[in-house]
Image 1: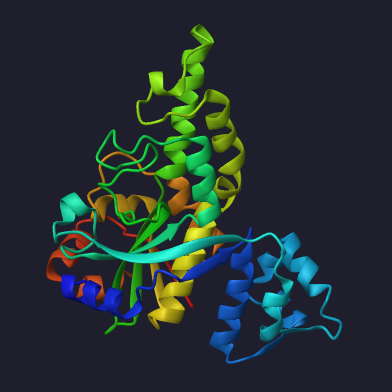
Image 2 (image 1 turned 90 degrees about the vertical axis):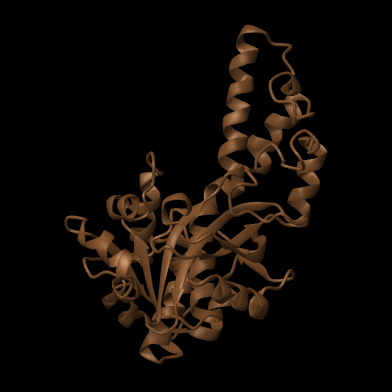
Length: 322
């Protein structure tokens, strides 16, 4: 995307009060709703659901429980939200831009920019974070112990759990999800593990003797990572993908969503090292993306991107119609 396109979308859609509620496997209800929309239906029979591409969702306890309440054998679109559980995790959504039209440095498929959707922690989490972790944000110019301001995270009052980088083309009705990633959960777990290894040799070691930006007591830090963050660890990837699909479909009006495969994504984005393979194998399969060798049309229209794609032997992608 051109930088001005990113700015225009942010100006139109950015809203600090946008709340996204998630619970484990909520994406199943989203996929059912998307399917209804594609079929132009507000009601779906259970028999049709069983015969559709969504048949695998019936193995989910959440979906089975919802279908037991369909006494007439029909699932109504308006009833989907009535099946939501009582325990729901809220996120604050914000938008940002990423990239300076430098593909090699920005890890973008085009020498252009990305639109970034950020999933930020809510107020309750932030209270627990400050109470238990006691971050020393003055240590590195306001950067907290579990974030990296060189990544596309929110740099206002919000703290970002995860982000989704996207390339959008309205003329071809296509969106490419470039990356789904988090720093916070990974860094928190890793830092606790390092401290725990130090305490094996010296049990009195305090967190700030290992990391100067954490003033927490050891037990408080351990409770934060192992208890406060555990619900987020269990849902962050699927919550991020679900929020992205919702945003692409409902806010941008795009219905064709592409996602990188592991090998093709590494090559076209010039990724150094190896990103988590599951994010480019298990996650798209979980959401029903179909493997395809057809590249996004807007990339093939771009001279530089087309050259990179043609240099890749058997490029592969994932595609989902929403």
